[in-house]
Length: 595
Image (cartoon, rainbow, N blue to C red; front, top):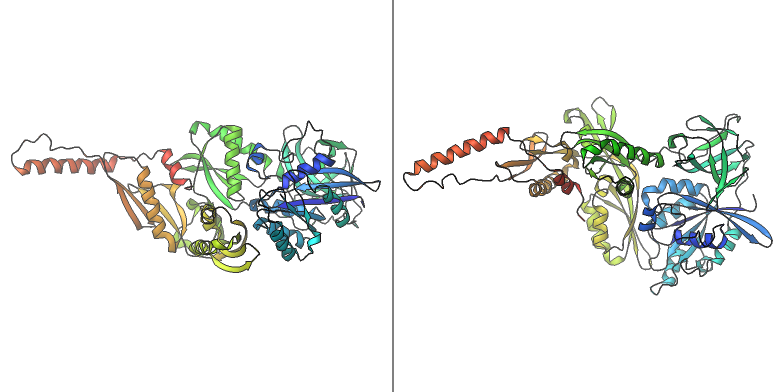
């Protein structure tokens, strides 16, 4: 165990985390030149194209120093805020973390969030400034920020270029000297910690683990502590990054086990595995069931694709335990699914994968969050969709989720950010100046940041701001359900839960938008935004008008009035029996955030 080093790589999106992992694998891994390609640890095309890591990956490297062979286990973690639970579980399997900071952009929000998490878990932080080869690199100010942030000396900071390989040789030596070996557990029986799990078509669920104590080997009967499910291990091994099967995994090792596990629910991320013979085994701290935070209705654009859509969602949920779905019906949109996600990026990734891997297009309803409703009977219910909301006369209190958001921006955009956050009902909590940027934090309702907040943040700062958020609490709030009525008929797919203070303005915006999307009919179509029986905003789409007086060539005016009155009565009768057909394209335009 003294020769094992378990490390993680943490960084903001696009700071060169996966590229650095590539260089280390190229130098010390078991891949041939022919097998090497960019972003080896990013297994999905989507990850490579967008430059993001979606799933945690691991690789074991062998490194010789002073005639001693060291085993370096690297865990490459996601960088985006939506996957922060996976990051926390990956970090708890490590003893140190490489903090990668882009020399051109400096410390950004997710770097700070994940570094703080690593420090709380007691990890050694090894700071690395990357992209030093770029002409726009500002190494001096980035060093100053790192010294202030981590309270270290400048000499502790490594300078590398992951792209060219400059300075990469010093990283592993530093890791060996500064990273402690895995701690020795007093537990005698085999015990392991689940870092991640995914479904493989041929092997079933592959479980990525760190062995805490004892030896994990084939034929060992194990128990998953959170759900008491029992399995027999078939195979164990490591990634180099190719799959390499081993006879056993020993204490301190990071590798995988295969045990005929059929679903991800049976081996959740962060759970503990123990030998079935262990008496009163204790679970490792930090495990929690992942709960989706953002919900949206997914309706197939072509209703014939419903069964194919269900199969596709089934397959995606096999590989992603944090994605949930259940069948849902809408009078306007037909049969669809209520899907739960960790955040907006997670939702975008699922939608993109459905389009690429299964050639399916969906209409998505406006994203909503989980509200807690205290009823007058003192019972608490969770509401994920506007149509599940109880009647007003049954509700005692409305609780909405509050997020703490940390934003890092160049100081010249500070005013625009404060204005944006206050408009979104934010309350400022902290403000800290760095050498060439400002860090500001707000408490903002989660419902205000899941729709168009990040688009507005990026546009008001010309793309320079970075952010990180955490859901911290539920607070009482004045929320209402806004219904959209077309020709006095409620369109359930367009209902939204809004804050009372914004309801008038939002209702006006929504109906004016819808007015441009509904095609004209032979009769006038009224569009209303209502809260209960109260109309907040109203407009109409004018009907086509035939010139019924064109055949008149003169005579008394009463002949003209008679024909107009007859037309008016006909329109009134048509309005009563006529149905307004809202095309799906209109729903699509209405619900997609404006870029």
